[in-house]
Image (cartoon, rainbow, N blue to C red):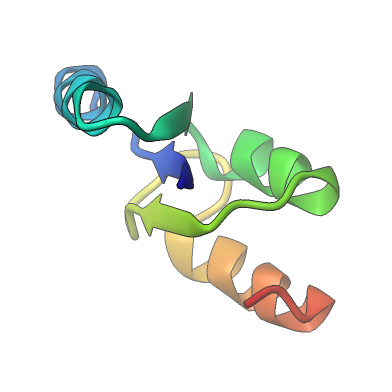
Length: 72
């Protein structure tokens, strides 16, 4: 499974990414909403773990843009 973790807390993101990789998933990490939105515009993921309180673009705004693009 290909997973994108969008989390601004580096320690939490590191723990999530390491655990998910350990159990066999391909995992990418973005630390702010604007960067994550840019990645989501051209790459597809099976699962997105999205923090609501992100810098530069909130998680709710990232989600709204995903829905506008028709991402599932």
